[in-house]
Image 1 (cartoon, rainbow, N blue to C red):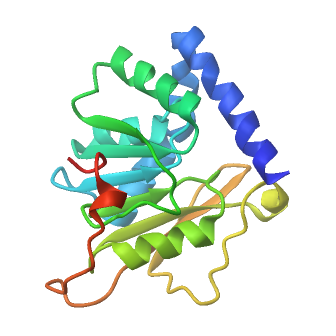
Image 2: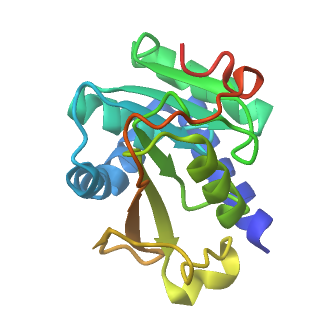
Image 3: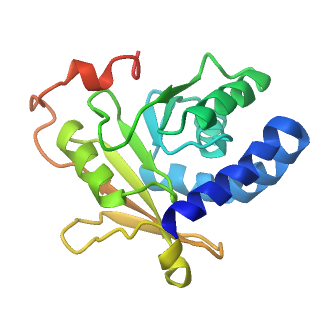
Length: 204
């Protein structure tokens, strides 16, 4: 059921490639959500943002760049979605600012990023979150979108019992309840083991 929701979302997003004007729908849907998330994480133009789970139409990544000026890297584990996302970004002349790569959130190295955004459709969320917290530097801001309880069977469950939630912001969306923020603690000068094989081609 959870994977079905991902596929359904992707099918809707593929429409943008065939009918570019439909992007306005996604732009409108995510506009306030992204604005709230920018405030939540206090995103600056100098931040390096990693979006996990971009899909064929990475509207969140696009708006994060357009609203803050920060550079964004998007990863997705669906090759077809990656190819379509690149075309959609090209059409908006944003290829110099938003990079889309084929990768999986459970394998990614977040060492080079200051902000990480985990999409609602990402699966499995907790495993991806652990990988991010293990590989990112202290001070990195991690945002996770959490579904409304009524839609919990359609998305990957995110257990927060053993996770420190530093802040959260609620959204007025039927399926999206809130975005939580977790800031990795530790000495900012602390050395984190860096895996060049995991991060190669992502944060360049």
